[in-house]
Image 1: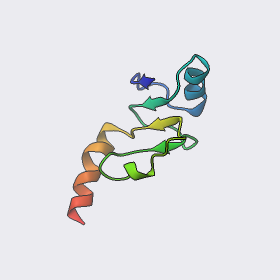
Image 2: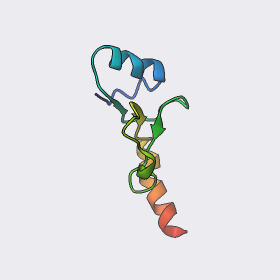
Image 3: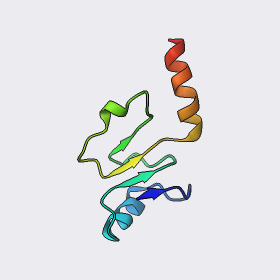
Image 4: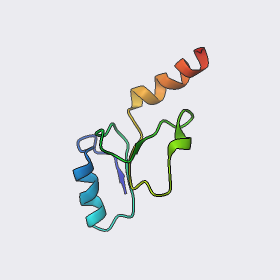
Length: 73
């Protein structure tokens, strides 16, 4: 389930999607600290595990700036 509402990002809301039948939930926006993972592709996607069921793709700002910061190091 891809949740792009930008409104809900808590584990509670992710669990609701799972209870409704979703196998996994990916928030396209920041989530709470209690999610299985927050992933910025190109930076820490190696932390993503098959067992993670509720994941956030961070924020659009994070996805834009982190790769630049990583390159500048």
